[in-house]
Image 1 (cartoon, rainbow, N blue to C red):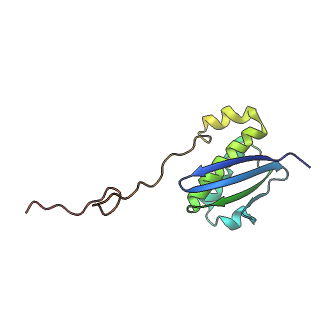
Image 2 (tube, rainbow, N blue to C red):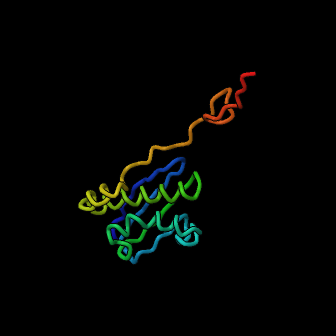
Image 3 (cartoon, rainbow, N blue to C red):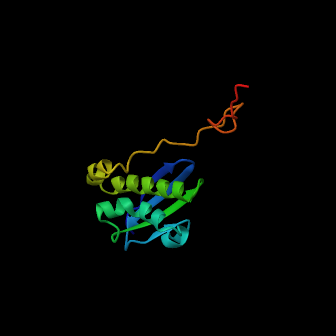
Length: 129
């Protein structure tokens, strides 16, 4: 049994728990294959980005449990989690992943709605008379 490496990735309101182990390159998200869970090709590419960069897509199996947010938020959370798990797997991948900006947690979140406004910043139309 190969050692399992664990990491958590987050983006917006999504959080992904990533389990990484040696294998043939299978990626399962919430017990479904990657291409079945994410219908859109762009989201799949987002998830595979750290693996393609480090050229490990055929050598590592990944099991992901993700919850919250939308599909692209989840894809971003998985990408962040995979990047962090890869560092736990091999510390020498850190400079490569850091240069690509895959280790930085994206801090952008939805701004809250303020009282007296229609949305976070949108106010009702102003008229002088």
